[in-house]
Image (cartoon, rainbow, N blue to C red; front, side, top):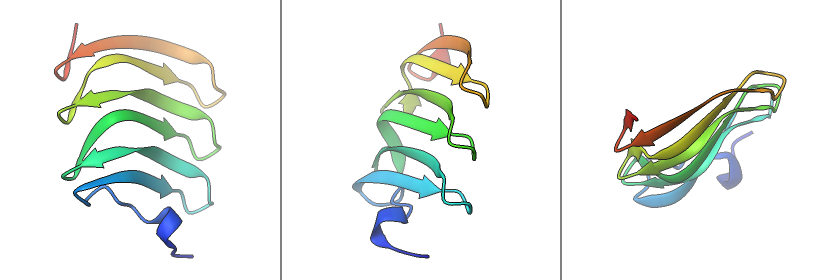
Length: 86
């Protein structure tokens, strides 16, 4: 089931990246610039629950990242600056 809406655009110069699991559930969504994540990114479990969410700046994790279990319960929050936990 290939279509423009489920194509992995992470290698395009500056595009929205959206990818799905084989079961049709969303795997991740975010922006990519020159093949690297930029801005907000949300990753999902194959059951549709959020797995991780956070932001990238210049391709590196930046800001608060939240991590959840497969039932949607928050497990941890980590603050990053230029790709390193602070």
